[in-house]
Image 1 (cartoon, rainbow, N blue to C red):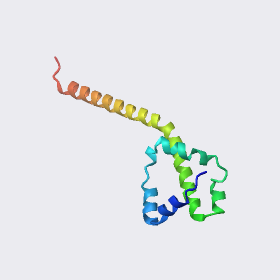
Image 2: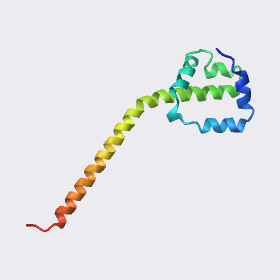
Image 3: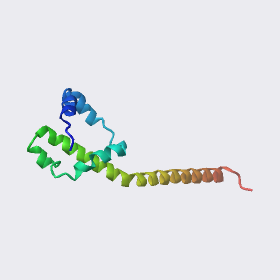
Image 4: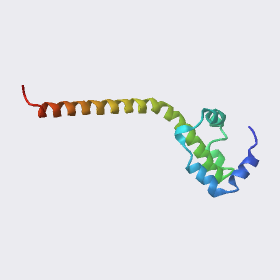
Length: 113
């Protein structure tokens, strides 16, 4: 594994900004390149919160966050097609509702022949 100590020190030099970047991170759009880069850590027995806690309590939270984002990404991949189907169903329902409403309105307002 690569040594990220210098990068970590820079990130943590402004804790408020670092925390804001975690809070504001968009889990819906995690680039596949990032997922591929963190994948090896997900199977690394040393990258478990209980193991990391023995070294650093602060890094335990970061470890938990990274694992949560990774899991979210994979769950989201399964959910996206379902969301798309939901949108299609909602549009279809709205279209049918409007068509039915328009048909009933016209039927009730037009004089009988």
